[in-house]
Length: 120
Image 1 (cartoon, rainbow, N blue to C red):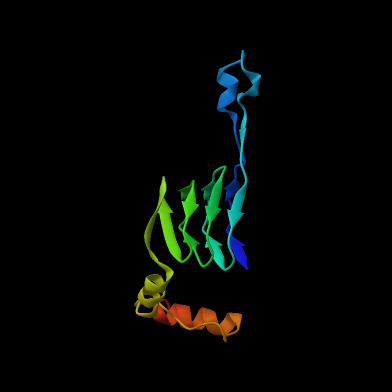
Image 2 (cartoon, helix red, strand yellow; image 1 turned 135 degrees about the vertical axis):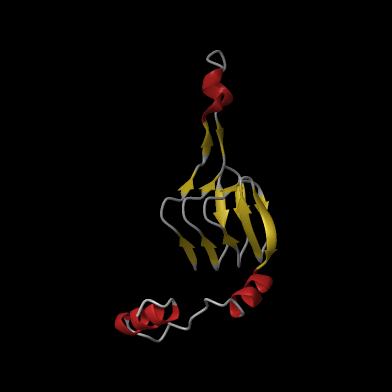
């Protein structure tokens, strides 16, 4: 149960070894692991040897490297933990633009959004 948004790249190698033509053996490679129930926002870079835990959110445009613990919300370059997913859920629950649209059809969603944002 993982969602990866458009433009996100999984980089499993580091090509910096080309700087040293006398040492062709300096290419670095590493795996990337993403835990269950994780969402990765638009245009993120996931670098070699990265592990993202379960129940995580990676903010759009983040550059992720290393270990991200379970239940974390991360963002930035380099990506850093800014809160837990429990805190994010509470913030979303009280956000002034939160709208319950999951049971609405496309027409109903459009009408609700237009009304909410004063575009009737």
